[in-house]
Length: 139
Image 1 (cartoon, rainbow, N blue to C red):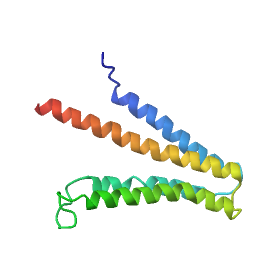
Image 2: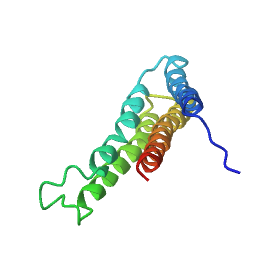
Image 3: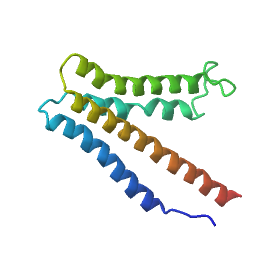
């Protein structure tokens, strides 16, 4: 038996998950009267963009990004990994420089990872459901 979840349920659950991540990062700023962890939100929001840009095959106009090579996709993975590593390391650097406390550092890292994972899960859920809808329409 296959259990099918409606898209509205997916959107609501992922928005609650995303709101939890934003709540953790904003509380890490507001509770300790220090707003440096807000930079972490920016880094984690920018993280999935290289994969979405270089993941499609519509950019294959040059030899560097030809469909037979994975150079563009590898570059997207590298840049995404760099953003995620920077998002994890940024609160640690702020903590090391004594700009934020340890609790604020932990809340900011956990909240940022929740934000990034909810964006990735959202794109994964709806990319796979769009592919399945196209298969059902034409197959």
